[in-house]
Image 1 (cartoon, rainbow, N blue to C red):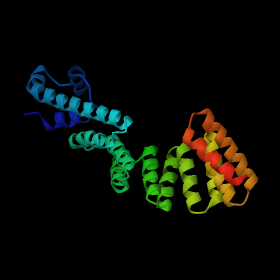
Image 2: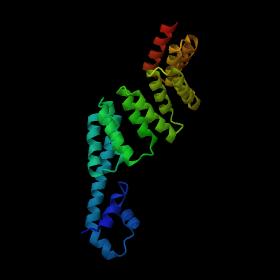
Image 3: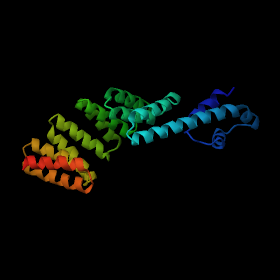
Image 4: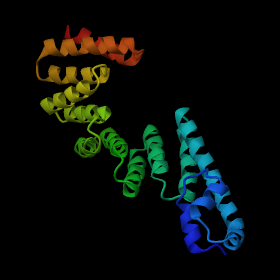
Length: 237
């Protein structure tokens, strides 16, 4: 029977390691111990390979927008490795894409419990709260994302959008300014800021921002964003 110590160490490895690497890392004391545990080690490695394959399949399916099958793949990973915060995170964003924000938030909660230092998981959870209309809770998560990574452009933009929904337009402008400072070519920041200025009654500045947004969207091939910006320009003109 494989020892509990050996089993614990094996389960801590990343998927896909060769048997030779595992043996080297475990630093078995003798060939006798190695031989006694070989069958169990090989079995664990085969399981690890299957889980890694499921994880990679989930990533591919997500990229193909096949979110339900992606969820199945990440669930397979989680069944075999309950400490995989990345699997919970990816399953969460898959649920989000399907509009199941409650289940998405549950998965992000679990991912954060496992690893509270990844800014993008707070960002993802914030987006789910925002989609549920819970702007304050969304802002709490975007705040944490920014604390962990003050260069997270999407967190600033998402927090700005949340402030717009709460009619706190000057706070929104601050966040869009931060995003533009980090990336002057971020079209959505100009678009969001244009809306803030419009709601504050500064039509000329709003027009300038929507013009900038339209130009950037066009350059970047973002047809939907370009059309939205043009619609606003026509409305404001």
